[in-house]
Image (cartoon, rainbow, N blue to C red; front, side):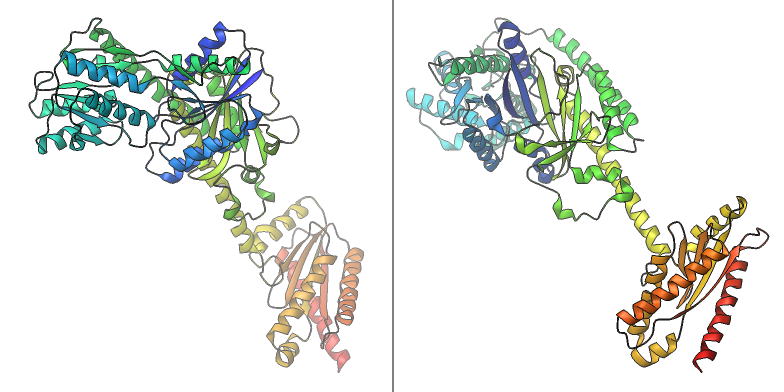
Length: 632
């Protein structure tokens, strides 16, 4: 089974589904076993560049050398540095690399001949319609497609002995507003031409809309042509002269070229899909096969129905995800929803540090700068599908991108999608054979809904973690680490009441540091604090697990110890005093570490915890008086 990687950026919120159609047609017609791994982003339309960077991180996921071939669809990527990074990585993979739509020096190419297509269009305008002034309205200047179309425009003028005038050229992007602004610009300069040659149909529609608004008629006042044969060209009024081609054919040709390369039978590094010139009303021609506008209206109505269905599906998905309490649960709900829409298997892999938030009680502090903004960590947790034991970890450094799943023998498409919070890497989704999702163009909405749910859950888990930390700070004493007086109501009292209800005895110990005033006055309060924390440390070490130790006052400590008898309490007291004596001797302190301890065993629910603490306090005070008398 051969593996081919396709790196592609969507057009705004849309997927180039025709790539998938071309792949399906080729694999249906040929016996070649080829799996297509699609690394897809939506990174060219958002005004938040940090978000776009998070999208483009998916291109850094694969080790391209692990594939048998690479397809690059970079036409929509606007960042030159990112393009160069992808091209360099592809070249270094040492496998066949085929660029789609854009000719890149040194790489194989599958696309159309933009230059010849515009040259034929220019010949038509000049020879058939006797145009002498022709303006060019281009797309993004950095686009190689736009550059080829402009080169053909300029050299066609030269071929027909028409002077090139740079003031008759403007460029911006491939959207309708480029055409709207271009007409206004040329009108203000008094440079309206015989014909407008537009780099695509969107721009041509913009010219036509602006012309109508300004009172001009097309084609009577000037001709307009487009490129791409989008629906808006043939169904517009007037129908717009355009140039059509099939991206599915381009993908089909690319796979044919790849097969010839593998067989050492490639006679050219270029393969061109055919183009079709549709000369229509906007250039004064009569369309030979005019599009049925009634069918367009019917299709538009059905499109509105699909859009409404999609919104309902997204609301349903959001409802599925909103109450999830773990990343695993989110993934399970998403997969359930995807299966209802004809998607195959699904995998979710996440940064281990973020996935650890599910184990909120044991999560260590993680600094924000540990999270990657470029690339992925070597180890990723397989959040879904979940193994029956602990979560699996995938080692990306070995080139493995898919967890162990049941893979069918047929040709498969694996769609890799980034999961991120703006620029911060979180993980990635893998969807298998999700043609329905792509063809109906609700991949972006699905992904955005899921990403929003992941981020919301992340925020809730972080909030729980912070609240737990605050709660611990609220009931803990900062000097000794003991519980403070706030823990009396929250911990000690419930434990005492539970033991009394079940007839279990509870040891109550009251300890007080000796001669603390002398230490503070003679050696300073820092030494007094050291004495308090040292005594607390000894008590903590000697008290059993399950007991509640509290700093009850400045130098007073109370311990509530379930299931302790008089004898066990006496043993505990002796151990604490012996440990204090040993610590005092071994630390060579200039003052002794001593404490007075009183205890009682609570076994009568008629008395309150406070009653027993007071009894233990009295015994402690009696012992303290005895200590003073002994020293005197």
